[in-house]
Image (cartoon, rainbow, N blue to C red; front, top):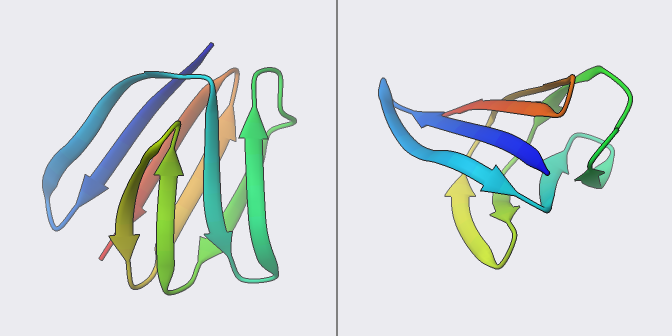
Length: 74
Protein backbone atom coordinates (compact mmCIF):
# COMPACT_ATOMS: atom_id res chain seq x y z
CA UNK A 1 0.00 0.00 0.00
CA UNK A 2 1.22 3.51 -0.86
CA UNK A 3 1.09 6.45 1.53
CA UNK A 4 0.06 9.57 -0.39
CA UNK A 5 0.19 13.25 0.47
CA UNK A 6 -1.21 15.87 -1.94
CA UNK A 7 -0.61 19.55 -1.10
CA UNK A 8 -2.13 22.40 -3.12
CA UNK A 9 -1.67 26.13 -2.44
CA UNK A 10 -0.28 25.63 1.08
CA UNK A 11 -3.06 23.29 2.22
CA UNK A 12 -3.25 19.54 2.39
CA UNK A 13 -5.87 18.17 -0.01
CA UNK A 14 -5.32 14.45 0.54
CA UNK A 15 -3.36 12.37 3.03
CA UNK A 16 -3.83 8.64 3.30
CA UNK A 17 -3.29 5.19 1.82
CA UNK A 18 -3.79 4.26 -1.83
CA UNK A 19 -3.21 1.26 -4.06
CA UNK A 20 -2.34 3.35 -7.15
CA UNK A 21 -1.52 6.94 -8.10
CA UNK A 22 -1.61 8.21 -11.70
CA UNK A 23 0.35 11.41 -12.39
CA UNK A 24 0.20 13.78 -15.40
CA UNK A 25 3.99 13.79 -15.88
CA UNK A 26 5.79 15.96 -18.41
CA UNK A 27 6.38 12.95 -20.70
CA UNK A 28 2.89 11.40 -20.28
CA UNK A 29 0.79 9.66 -17.66
CA UNK A 30 2.79 7.83 -15.03
CA UNK A 31 1.31 5.12 -12.83
CA UNK A 32 2.81 4.53 -9.39
CA UNK A 33 2.23 1.24 -7.57
CA UNK A 34 3.68 -0.26 -4.40
CA UNK A 35 7.49 -0.79 -4.52
CA UNK A 36 7.96 1.79 -7.30
CA UNK A 37 11.55 2.95 -7.80
CA UNK A 38 12.42 6.30 -6.20
CA UNK A 39 11.83 9.22 -8.57
CA UNK A 40 11.07 12.90 -8.92
CA UNK A 41 8.97 14.24 -11.80
CA UNK A 42 7.50 17.49 -13.10
CA UNK A 43 3.72 17.56 -13.43
CA UNK A 44 1.81 19.31 -16.21
CA UNK A 45 -1.83 20.34 -16.50
CA UNK A 46 -4.19 17.43 -16.02
CA UNK A 47 -5.40 15.45 -13.04
CA UNK A 48 -3.77 13.40 -10.32
CA UNK A 49 -5.71 10.20 -9.76
CA UNK A 50 -5.49 8.58 -6.33
CA UNK A 51 -7.28 5.24 -6.61
CA UNK A 52 -10.65 6.32 -8.10
CA UNK A 53 -10.54 10.01 -7.07
CA UNK A 54 -9.21 12.73 -9.41
CA UNK A 55 -7.72 16.07 -8.40
CA UNK A 56 -7.13 18.75 -11.10
CA UNK A 57 -3.64 20.29 -11.30
CA UNK A 58 -2.01 22.96 -13.44
CA UNK A 59 1.59 22.13 -12.62
CA UNK A 60 3.69 20.75 -9.80
CA UNK A 61 6.21 18.19 -8.62
CA UNK A 62 5.84 14.62 -7.42
CA UNK A 63 8.32 12.48 -5.53
CA UNK A 64 8.22 8.76 -4.81
CA UNK A 65 10.38 7.06 -2.19
CA UNK A 66 9.84 4.01 0.06
CA UNK A 67 6.12 3.66 -0.87
CA UNK A 68 5.51 7.35 -0.05
CA UNK A 69 4.17 9.61 -2.82
CA UNK A 70 4.43 13.35 -2.15
CA UNK A 71 2.70 15.68 -4.60
CA UNK A 72 2.93 19.50 -4.50
CA UNK A 73 0.73 21.32 -7.02
CA UNK A 74 -0.58 24.70 -8.01
